[in-house]
Image 1 (cartoon, rainbow, N blue to C red):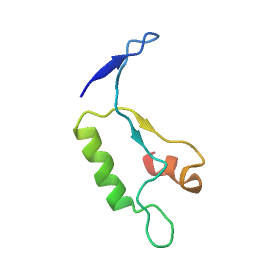
Image 2: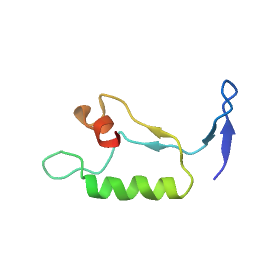
Image 3: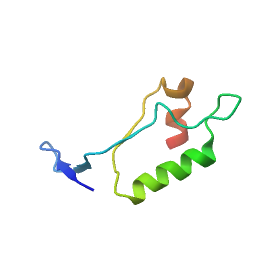
Image 4: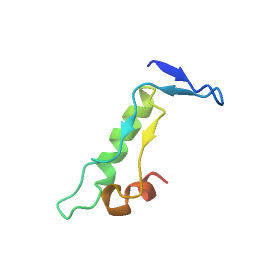
Length: 67
């Protein structure tokens, strides 16, 4: 994985991030937490350390899932 240094604090962020706007969902529209967990774990295991989530994603359920 390639990383870039954040000038302000020296953190190294992966140049590839994991976007959470389109996590896998079940038929009822809720996050399929088992599949999403496997996907996120795989990304982290490959060196991704930047996860992009926001309050509106999945009708407010993306951030609590990651919390």
